[in-house]
Length: 251
Ligand code: 1GP
Image (cartoon, rainbow, N blue to C red; front, side, top):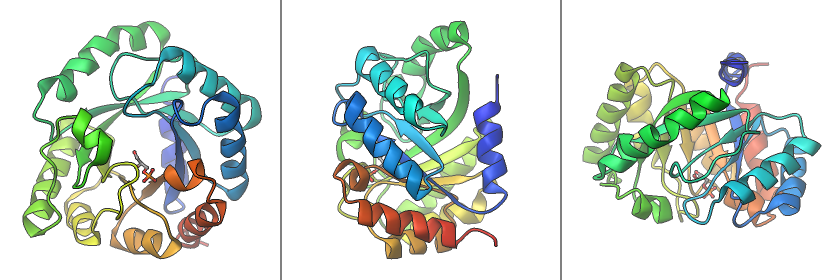
């Protein structure tokens, strides 16, 4: 049904922040991803995102999605990097535009290429403004991003891009430092974006500890995304982060 996942996200956000676990079909293929998703679900993650910057194919994506759906009832949301891969079994797709890319292909080109298939499949598309913050890691490179700098000028630029996303009608804004980033997004940037933004704010990249999660939540993040700690089976860390998110929810 159209809009079902977005409705679920909105309903969950009524109670406070939520957590999503990102799995890459190239590094956590079918059965591996399934076991990680099952553990993450038991810890209380709210949704599974699937995607990666390179080496995602329709085959490995579809296999991972089907495995996850066999074992959990969580929404499975595709987090694409190009229009080159798709699974008909995802519950929704983040229909994202890399707002600070230098390449029009990453802002609207891949999106136009993928739109007809999404329409044909009837996949729920959740429009999202994606803003890449230094160091950006692999996604920063493949997206040809003009990265947000980790300073006051960067915070102002991120806030302006986020506000533009909201004015375009995008339902979410995602501040991304890149998977495997040594540090999460600076809280000052999260705070600056939060100050101008009314739609939910997603923050991801480099989140490894409960303390980092707490700081990002206090700065105004609504959805925290972690991938590496789960994929590397640092489940104690995953538990810490999910606990921080749950702790910030209303009683
Ligand atoms: C990447 O923000 C996500 O898109 C997750 O990053 O792998 O560093 O948790 P990590």
